[in-house]
Picture 1 (cartoon, rainbow, N blue to C red):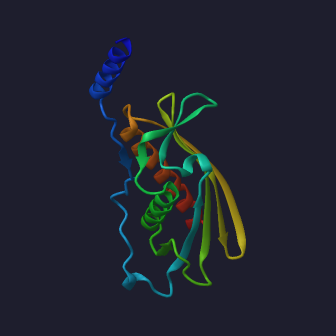
Picture 2 (tube, rainbow, N blue to C red; picture 1 turned 60 degrees about the horizontal axis):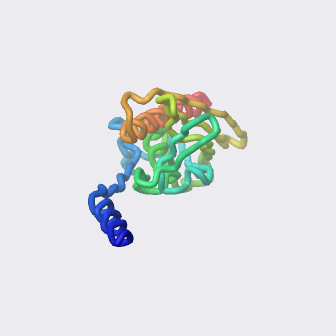
Picture 3 (cartoon, rainbow, N blue to C red; picture 1 turned 90 degrees about the vertical axis):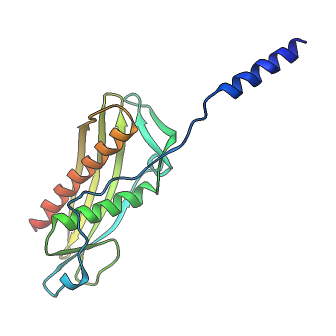
Amino acid sequence: MKKWLSLAFLATLTACSSTVKDTWYQLPMSSATQPVAMGEVNQHSRLLWVEQVVIPDYLAGNGVVYQTTDVQYVIAKNNLWASPLDQQLRNTLVANLSAALPGWVVSSQPLGSQQDVLSVNVTGFQGRYDGRVVVSGEWLLKHGGQLTKRPFHIELPQEQDGYDAMVKALASAWRQEAGSIAGAIAGL
């Protein structure tokens, strides 16, 4: 009898529990980014190939990452990236650099022998326990046979609580870094 009551109680609890739904996130594209029409490409256009954006294993899964202490991280089980994070970072970087570098053709595909090549190693891309987001890493640019390497570390506050606000703040920090990269490239 006690077993029966325990099973009935457990079944009732299970039936009453709410179902947790997955939420999928995509980094937003800036409204300022406009694709370059092929008619605008000419012999004077400078070429930039964004060869790769590399992320560490803990960021490579589907779950959005949240740092709970200075040494602990949680990978969300129900707040997920809609497509692989490295692809999202690369696509938004190409779009943001295209908008920030008029006269340049920026692509995620090789463009020819006279192209500059950019590689980015992202070491941090997460929300944090203090209400801030962290975007960090380094980039390497090959330009005219020379290499330029620069680290980056951006921390921005979230405007609100929650994963939506965290993803928007991460996207804003990533746009900010794209602007820094564009400034460095334009200065070459």
